[in-house]
Length: 242
Image 1 (tube, rainbow, N blue to C red):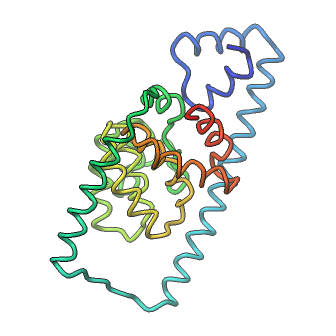
Image 2 (tube, rainbow, N blue to C red):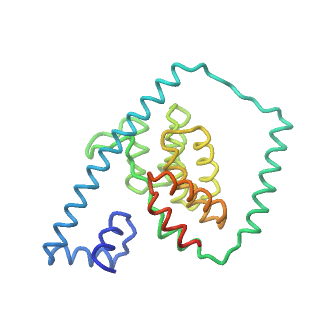
Image 3 (spheres, rainbow, N blue to C red):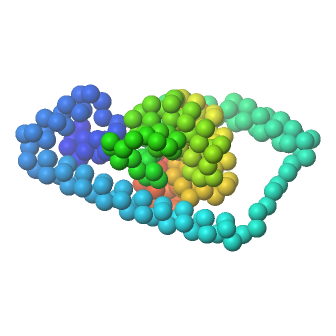
């Protein structure tokens, strides 16, 4: 791969061991490459800071709106809930049968998936793990997704932060539990969570991993049309699926 692709894949966390060794070799031997990589690291840090600030504003506006609006409780009658479940199971089975396309969906998924970074609860290295949220996001950042999933579930029982569902879904994807991830992401998107546009990208990838290409394509078009998070990558993936 060329140097630009090497740097791009480094920040996408998709380099294998050989790629990482090549990147290290170039960093030590090629001053121009080293300068470009350092610049990209600074840029990534700035983007992460900006995204955290943007999300803080989104969360603040969401909380203000929720305080001002009256609460609503929607209850489904038992027979209607049961009928809905039967309908959804039937539709899912039908789509699974007809979505066999011969596309290597697993390979495409592996190429485009990387876990969303923790931008909502930054962890300062060395701080004591005193609260449940810090423990959960520390496990997430360290790649211990089974522990993170368990802690996120505990956290949902004690917290009103909707974005916990989003990170729980990413942990499920990392554990190859895509059907469970789909259910959480769909719920989160319906609730109009602050990370909704991010959730649509990950839901599209989960559908892809489950060979539900039509559903994945529909969501990818939506991501691409919004020209926001992962829009460029969504367009590329759509071309690969075409």
